Image 1 (tube, rainbow, N blue to C red):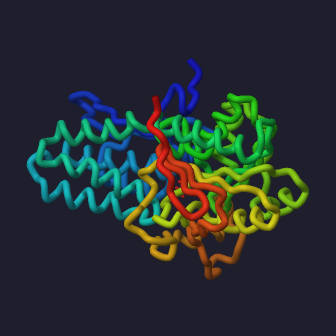
Image 2 (cartoon, rainbow, N blue to C red):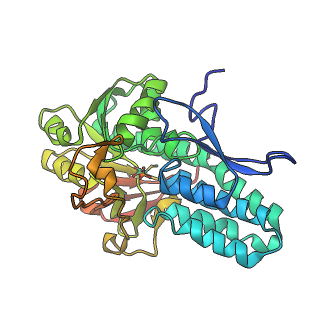
Length: 348
Ligand code: MRU
């Protein structure tokens, strides 16, 4: 059977293992893509923390799963030491501060600690099991809204970073919505920004689009505004790492610049994310902590130095796009438009 991410294999999963191996968290190694497809078994919290830090596993919903499974791993290794489990859980939650799903995943699993290791593992696995239905629903809702905004016709969509199955457990958020639009025959082409410095667009989104059989072209981030000016973009569709109560949205660095250019050209920008990415305790984008990453990510491209070794670097992993620049934020159960959240009717 062909391995198709988002349909036949999960990006991140619990692996119970056997008496010899013990349990582990199984992850698709996103650093090896697109050249090599391999699954890594992370059997310790240390290994999981390293994999989150170095982006072996990445993307907001996938990080939520990593957080919950990190607690599951800790409780299975230290079943009689709740303090140790809590300390390990905090270590996992703190690795990447912007993507709120990571800490939420940790907290959800940790809340079952008093019920024993089995309950913690079951809660973590439940979070993973919910991912596909959530993503399919927000994809449907986004596709309906895009149709309303842009018409029922083949569209040219621009996306940034990777919000596909690789960024979730399955299916994807922003790219999941594009998958849904493609299934409806409404995608003429996807323009995928390469997404410097770590090239999640070039390495991961393009790989997923090829798997999906969706027409696409790769462009350098700096070409996006000119693509808009030349009429090549009908809508921008992206994911999110944290959405404040007022709709301000943290996503991969470069999203804000795309939104500024899109506003200039009257092109709608849609943010697509699960409710678990909405942080109603943070009033606005000003309260979102933006992760700064290592200088060498910018001084090199795919490991090849492109700047003098000690060049000072500014390397925020994310930026915050003001809600005023967004046509909508769409979750599985709500839509933020025109400055307010509207709850959706429950599915039949
Ligand atoms: O640094 P990354 O690769 O984890 O950043 C990921 C993004 O910015 C994605 O666009 C975001 O998590 C939405 S994915 C569902």
